[in-house]
Each structure stands twice: as C-alpha cells, then as structure tokens.
Amino acid sequence: MSETASTATELASQYAAQVTGDLERNAKEQERLSSEITTLQEQLAALQRDHSVLVNIQQALGSTRAPVGEAVASDTAAVPSPRKKSAPAEGAGGKRSRAKKAAPQQRKAEKKAPSAGAGKSAAEPAAKTAAKTAARTGARASAKTAVKKPAAPTLGELILGVLAEQAEPRSAAEVATALGEAHTDRTVKTTVVRNTLENLVARNQVQRTKQGSSVFYTVSETTPVAAPAEEAPSEKAE
Image (cartoon, rainbow, N blue to C red):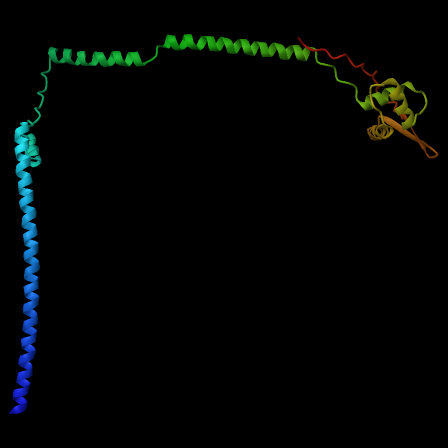
C-alpha cells in the first residue's frame, strides 16, 4: 500500500508542476496579445483622427470629388452609346453627297501625283548633258586615234633589213653592230640578236650556214623584206 501511495503522490506532483507551467505560459501569451491589441487600437484611433482631419480639409477646399471606384462607375454610366448612322436614301441626293466626298480625295491624289510634263522637263537637261559629255569623249578618243604613234618595227624586222642590205652572210655579232650603228637610241645585245636570228631560222625567214666554228646568217630568198619604218615623233592630241 505504501508503494502505491508514493507513486500516486509522484504523479500528482508532476501533473501539478505541468499545470503550473501551462498557466504561466497562458498568462504570458494573454499579456502579449493584450499589448498588441492595445497598440493596434491606438494606431486605428490615430488613423481615424487623420481621416477626420483630411475630410475637413477637403470640404474646406470645396472639392467634392468622389472616390475612385465611384467616379469610374459614374463616368461609365454617363457615356451614351454611339448612335448608328442611318443609310442615306438612294437617289439624286445620295449621288451628290458621294460626289462631294470623292472630290477632295481626287484633288489630294492629283496634288501628290507628279505631272508628266514636269518629269519630262526635268529629264531633258540631264539627257542633253549626257549627250554632250559622250560627244566630247568620242571626239577626244578619235583625235587620239588619229594622231596615234605608228608601231615601231620589231627587232626581227630590223634584223631582216640589215641582212637584206648585205650581200654576204653575217654573224650575229656583225648584225648587232650594224643595228647599234643604225639605231643609236636602242640597246642591242648580241645574245638577243642571236636568239632572234634562230627564231627567224625556225620560221624559214633566215638561212644559217656554218664555216668552221662560226655561224653566219642570210635572208631566205622567199622572205619578203620591207624597208624598216622610221619612228615618227610623238604628237599630243589637243
């Protein structure tokens, strides 16, 4: 019996301690909420006072503007629905009204569209200028062509002329010397003359004969030899 009594006593003491703690927490929570409610009531009272002051100021300024929601609703209700235009009766009156409406549009289109005469008058000076420029360019080109310097004779033609003037075969060095004396304004090299002579031999325009270690050249009998053209002085077209 003593053990049962002690156990019951311990449980009772535990419950009592738990209830005491719950009561303390409940009391603290009530105090916190009471303080918050008091603060909110003070804020609400301040807002109410400010509202009253603002309303008095609005009335003193003479402004009777309604709140935003009410103003929108009143404006929407005040706007009348658009009226449908009745179709004009067909007849002389309807035709005249359509003609009056079309006349301003036609005048606007005529103002915007450029006249053909204006475009033609603007294009004529440009065409005349282009024609004059083309005529001047053609005249200058024809003048340059008319006074164009004649083509100078080639080295092969000069060599053929030298060989035709000589009755006996000549070596490449002798031909180069003769060219240098006849054309002092040109630089004549023996190696170039020898190569040109060999090309003429390949074309059957010159015959080659060998005497010992020396090579001599003569004009072929079937080769027509023209007199070398003299170089004309250069002229500038005015």
